[in-house]
Image (cartoon, rainbow over all chains, first blue to last red; front, side, top):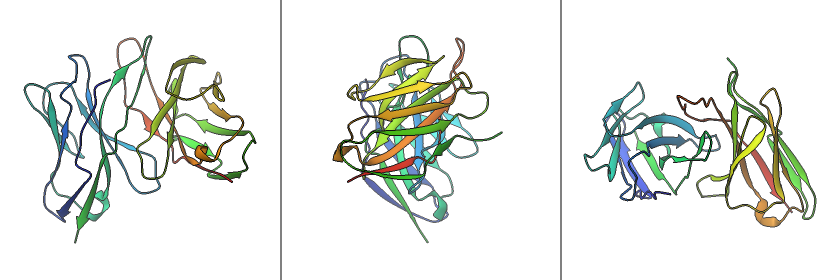
Length: 113
Length: 115
């Protein structure tokens, strides 16, 4: 399984962009990068995923380097409700179908007023 | 469209007892995964069920077992409870087909405390 490395914590001012980095240097060619977040005492919430191209949805943007060894999740205008633990995950494919998510420690993002 | 639900929300057991946790998948989903999250750590994969069969297992002993029913709901059973089994147990459902893979949707979890 490819491992991911994230900073344990980050702070961001409300209204500013939050840029969360992730290293996944051992990622293999057919593995996707997924981002989830977990607000305190809730289940994780899917944010975005990508393979090699940059992706954007209504929640965030995902920038993946050309060598795919790292990525950055961007929350363009952080709000207080974005305070959560953010997990960068590389998807592992199982034998037949589906896959498991291998969570690391994640980054605790605190958005300050 | 209803989301993933889990029951109970909280549970207290003593060492050596057995526990059953339940999960109802999101409508239309055919795969369910279970995760254990200890305090201050990320969720750890226990196992996944697809078409009522176990489809992958993490590093958990056999006393952790599960079932998936024809309506895609699921149970997690833990026998001979240990203190270290105290954790938040998360269920996640997804729709898996041969041509696509969708993200996993998580339930709110069941907080299990073993005394």
